[in-house]
Amino acid sequence: MRVLLTSTAGLGHLLPLIPFARALLAAGHNVEVACPAERAEHVAQAGLRHVVVDSPTEADRAAVRRHLPNADPAAMAAETFARLNPQAAIPKIDARVAEWRPDVIVSEAAEFAGGIVAERCNIPLVRVHPGAVHGWHWERLSSSILDGVRAQVGLPADKEARWLTTARQLCTFPAEFEAFKTSTPPVHRVRTRIWPEVSGANERGDTVYITFGTEISGMPIFPELARSAVHAVQRAGLHPLISVHNADLAQLSGLGDATVASWMDQYEVLPQVRAAICHGGSGTLLGALATGTPTVVIPFFADQPFNAERVVATKVGLSVAPGPGLDARLSHTLEQLLNEPRPGSSSMAAAIRNLPGIEAAVAVINSLAGK
Image (tube, rainbow, N blue to C red; front, side, top):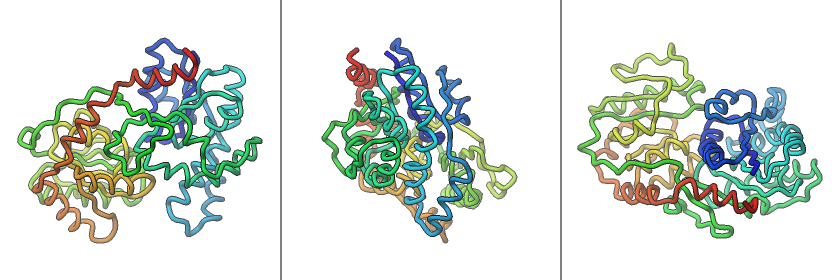
């Protein structure tokens, strides 16, 4: 079976797709990953073949900013992911599909070009959600913009985004984390790794893990954000362990005795730390949930506000808004997190550990190709 996986350039979008690609490869299938050129190294490191697709130009992005000068982040994201990205990527995905003739296309859920090409070429589509499904909010937010792209390639409008919501769906978050229950079609929930048993607080030492992901770490807000998080941990009498990704280390003064690294294997770190402070990105959050690690979420954009709401609602952590006075507010919230039980942590971790393994996802993909 030939399987073409498609992703946008964002690491938070590509990396959750990689375990599915490797599982398909291990099962003996012919696998390629289509994504922009800047992710070639990540694809190669995973032992996968890379198909290069185009990204929007800076001129394209600037035109969106001029068109929506006062738009909220959700509107800007919808324009980028639902219009600019697919318009750029469709030609090369189209060409590769015509040449290679994949049996199934597996798209990261915010990558829409693969699904458009799949529909036009009558190829089964599977969508991999890097985070929670959140009641199809992202699909419905994007549908009107996507209709314009669909029209450009000769597909009819679909205001309800049924071409997305009726495809087979794979997700690594348990249903217990979701506020909205999506039953038609069923979302196949799987785990991509074996998670350890949850350790008690007295087995976790005196360290708090801090990360704000790959995108925020490159933004001007990051140095002050990092200092606020580090100072909150230090005020609590604990040791900060902060991953700064691609941030300029010269701008990160005032972190005291914090352990600072560009990258950490959070799946090794999270089971050992007392708590985590993060932006609510899906990768970090899934690790915290699976290891029963109490978490403070400071949400900024994309699915982060939704994730923060669910962290509070499921009683696995707390949330604090970014903005003025974050230092004091975060210190108070962290103290509260450390001193009050999080009754949802153990049950959420158990729900993730009890999900079927990734071989169940391979079976779903096999079934669509009749293999």
